[in-house]
Length: 205
Image (tube, rainbow, N blue to C red; front, side):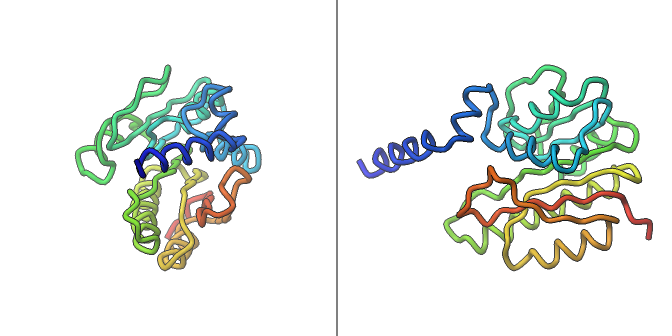
């Protein structure tokens, strides 16, 4: 009975959310699509011929947005969960931290790419500090891959949560990229501690 009440309250809350409603109207698989739309309007980094990697892509909202912008480029989505097909988006089912999956990603592009996206968050455990830390670790892993695969002026965009690992992520980003900007989209829930880190231009060490 309690579970049903929680589910009902969740549905009521979601239906009051204008971004959730718009995602249904416009056919996006997640409300987070609007976060990427807003950030792309601000930073203008997804071009019609971009090659783009979408890490933690499921259910596919960000890949849908990328597909609308990219006409001549390539899009590869990767997730540990299965994802329904999106036209002109290729998908690898697996963990990008796994050596074999990482090799498949490299072989797919066979060249340096323009954009690496990560909207990944760790599974919730009930411990917000732990969840924030684990999500931060995912960001660090994604950043490591981005440094290997991005072109000189490439872009890495990732979700992070304000917490104990934030400082480390920020320092790593500043040592690896020429430009680093923290940004909270309007479609991010006000109560959420999530922000996004936008990084552009690989620093040659």
